[in-house]
Amino acid sequence: MDFTIKRFEELSHIMHERRSVFPSSFTGEFVNDEILVRILDNANQSPSHRHTEPWRFHVVSGNAKKRFARFMQDSYKIHFEGENFNLMKYNKIAKKIDLTSHIIMISMHRDEHAAVPEWEEIAAVSCSVQNIYLSLTAAGLGGYWSTPAYFIRESRSFFKMHESEQCLGLFYVGVPKEDLPPRMEKRPVGEKVKFYRN
Ligand SMILES: Cc1cc2nc3c(=O)[nH]c(=O)nc-3n(C[C@H](O)[C@H](O)[C@H](O)COP(=O)(O)O)c2cc1C
Image 1 (cartoon, rainbow, N blue to C red):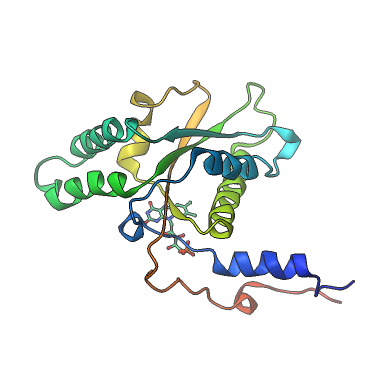
Image 2: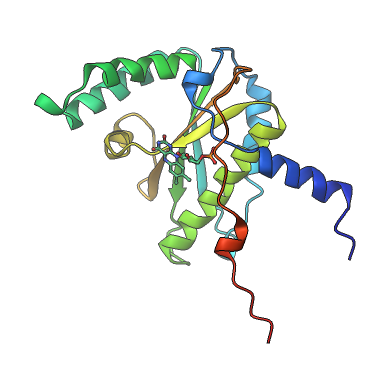
């Protein structure tokens, strides 16, 4: 088998380039809704055991961002009371959302028959999130998966979720600045692989 094929090289390049880009590195520009839908369509191509396709996406953009920022700050306040409350972090929440083009709430919809174990459904949703990451890299966009407990706890009061849906966090999407902080390098794959040849 010839592994020097162009498609493999291109995909490897995108995977090695993939990184989390945080809102502090966004320009504040907007991403076209059509591009966002293409990215979510790539997410929708993910594998799932028994074809349950458990990934669900709730997208916040435009005017809804202001309402979402207030909701996030209120949730933060509920979770961090008294001396645990940090005004800088509280203010940063709104700033982050302002710099973001689209906020995707990631959720897992468990099918009514619970046909496969929950962990398999979470794994399938995670595959879809990796497709989002890779699509953003290929499109020259950026973002990251964020899982704050204070938000996950309160998510149902903002989003219209089915009772069988479970929130798995937020994905912030934006246009990256040119001067990004260094990418997080991975430890060598050799440390994580064992071959059994005999
Ligand atoms: C399941 C999951 C949850 C994450 N939650 C957070 C989070 O709450 N806050 C955060 O800063 N990064 C979060 N991240 C992003 C990681 O910080 C990021 O992937 C890690 O720093 C490695 O960097 P890279 O994505 O550039 O390789 C999460 C990533 C995953 C896979």
